[in-house]
Length: 574
Image 1 (cartoon, rainbow, N blue to C red):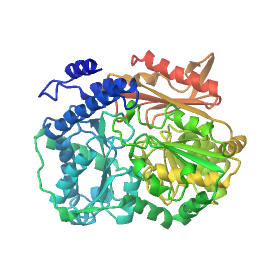
Image 2: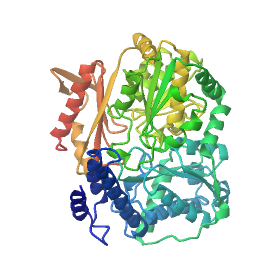
Image 3: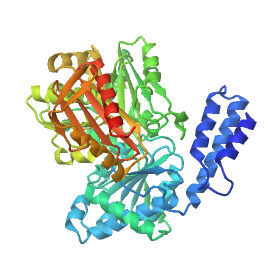
Image 4: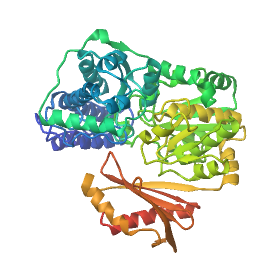
């Protein structure tokens, strides 16, 4: 083992040269060695020691790197993401933080920008302050401290939340009436990524007028080689209990969303006919579980991957079928009548459910949540879902004589219907409710799922079956491929899909389908004559092309996924 480790260290590190070192390929190789050893054996300990050594080298790079990010800063649908050390480090975080400060300076002379930010002056922004936190990524506290020092040195109050989730930070913005929030997180991206999420005073993902300005300012600062300095003012950095803010917000808005947080917890405390299993995938939700679910007996709550581990033990830390297997196995061994499992991503803005047998991604659960609020809670109003999301919610809304708001991918696109739509959700497992934050939040989804479970003793699968019996069955799916192109070059390649217009016939499995409609508000969505569809769009944060499909049968879903791959091959992207 020691020889293997030495060989790997020599292969992927260059002493004194961080730029030439590949720490994350090294980490993955070391994780493979750790997986192959018995826990707590000498081999396991040696692999762990090498992992710790590699992270120590990465720490040095994050502190000392003064080169521009390898990939230029760009705020996409959920902020800026990049490789730790090479892109995201102490200097680049300070540069982007300075860019945000500059935008508040500029807003004083630009009413449209000030309106989007939600503050009328720089003085107001400083006084209301910034809610600041980070997820479990390596170096998170250090990066957050760099941002806090710069902000406080320039007169901004910093409501410092420490390790926390995006939804909880957003709730803190509303409760504290802060000017904005910053979360150092790349959400569900793999272990090598860091990230920087910014939400304005409305607590939702920032509008394009803001993110474009932040991007421009950051690029200008980096191009000029400016290194923002400033000694933090400890008097302006105030520890903040962001989860308590979340709890307060949920309680205060009980009448709007219909969820009695304390009543749900009290009932769960006294019942013994259920089991709840939560997989934190080592993310920030693990620091909140005890208080979020206070009162639930230990024997009723199964916890998975709730230890500190910035490597995520090598898995892609996202809500997925593969990652739900651990929860499914545990639920399958339990005798309780009611079962609910959930997996939450590292910054707690995505969640996926299971009952141990049937998986409920947000295509299903978002539609169920809407039906539940509308029918069981007696709420009235529209549903909002992104264009890449299942039409199950559309069918329910149509049957209930309600409207559907269907924007491009990205939670910021829901701004026009915040406070109007009962449920807002997207296919990638993000959800929020009326009376809550305009940011996706795993915790509010979990609370609604628990309430639904308690109100429907037949179980959530039976509840879904009843809805399907009335409104029809839909079988959504998604996939993606890594490509070598990004930006304009990728957009030009995807333009090859324009040949697939309304009236064109395409082979799907052993049948030929006719395209009856094409929607181009976000990528290209082709709707076929049987109301099945497929959609292809570039990722806003990674060198990937994503595709989404929906069929009227499980077999049809797999055929549509194969068709999507075939279309990408035809235009030369595979």
